[in-house]
Amino acid sequence: MHKLFSAGLHLAPRHNLQQAAEQLRLYLPVLRQISKELEKYPNAELVDVTDNRDHMRAAMVNGKLRIDANEDRETVVHIVVPVETIRDAVNRLEEVSPGIW
Image (cartoon, rainbow, N blue to C red; front, side):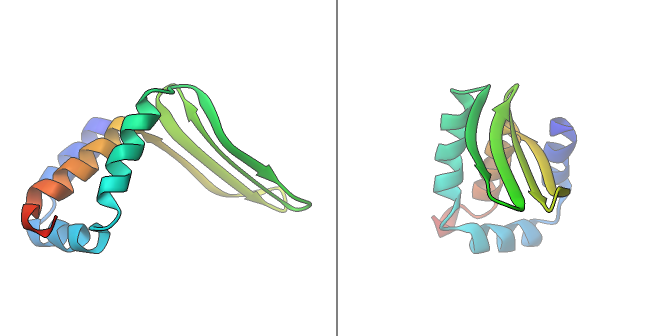
């Protein structure tokens, strides 16, 4: 899946990637640093919060960032992203618009 996503970034129209890079300009350095740090912890609980109705958990599982959020016991969000995918996306966005940094 990671390779498919990375290939998609290279096939996406350059102007679309440049627009995304411009919108994410402030966050790309943070995302780069987060991806570097997460690689150090391939299996770790990051956040686990529960209240009366809701539950949110973010964890690293086998090198993938996994985010689950439930509301009233129904899954609302379930995301699994390899850390290398985050890093590759940041690299690609920086490649297409190097002048905005």
